[in-house]
Length: 318
Image (cartoon, rainbow, N blue to C red; front, side):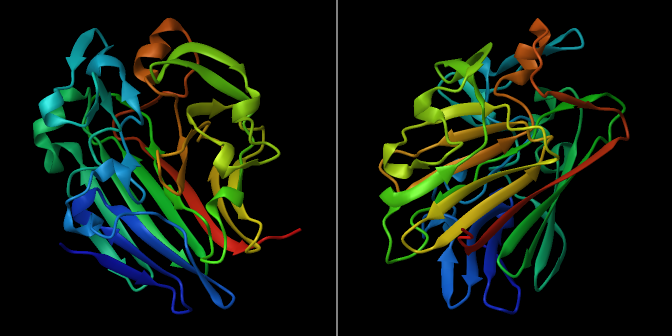
C-alpha cells in the first residue's frame, strides 16, 4: 500500500496513508538529541489490516463521533445511514464517511502533502446519506518538531452543507523510552463537560467533574475517560498537552477556537491517549433541532471554510 513519507531535513519525519483515509499514522519529532515518537499506531496499520479509526490520526467528516441510530432529519427530509456502508459503533453511525476510504493526492513535496476527498467522487455509494455533496482537503506539513494540518472544506453543491469536523489522534505514551506512561501528565483547559448516556449527549452541559478536570493536569494512570469536554476558554486558540516529567519532554496540540469541544479517550489496555478536537458535539445534527447550541455548522452553496491543527514536541518549559 502506498505510504507518503515527509521529512523536514532535520530529523523529524511523518508518514501518511492516502488509501486509509489520508491517515497520518506516524510522527517522529526530533527534539535536541532525542526522537519523540508522538503518534501511536499498529506496525501493521499501513497494510490495511487494522481498524481505520483505531490508529494514527483519523479524520472525522462530515460529522465527528456518533449520530444516534444513524438517523436524522434535515430540511424536511429524513436520512438513514446504512450500517453496511458506513462506520458504526453499535446502533450508531460514527466518525463520518472519510476515514476508511482512499483519498486522492493533489500535490506533494519533501515536507508536505495535500489530500482531497469528495463525497460524490470518492464515496458515491454514500452520497444519499448526506444532504449535500462536499469536498475536504487536508495539507499536512512538517517543520522542525511541528506537524501541521490545514483543512479546507468546500461545498460544491447547490444545497446547504451541514457539517462538523474532528480529528482522533492517538498520542503515544511515554515520550521517552526511559520514562513511564503512568507518570505522564495530561492537561486540557475544559471547564465543562456534556452529560452523556451510552456515549450520547443528553443536551445538558455540566461543571466538569473532579475525575475529568485536566486544568491542573492529571496523571495518565488515574484516567479512564471517553468524554466530551467543553468550555475550552475565551482565547483565539486552545492548547492541550502531554507532559512527560521524567523525560523533560512535552507534546502540545494547538487549534483555533472553532474547535469548541475536546473528546478525551483512554483506549483500554494501551499506553496511548486521544485528545480529539471537534467543531461540534457528538450527535449535533439531532441535538441542535432542540434549540441547543452544539457548534453544528452549515456551509452555503459554493462556500469554503478553512481551519488548522498543530502538534508540536519539545522540551518542558518551566
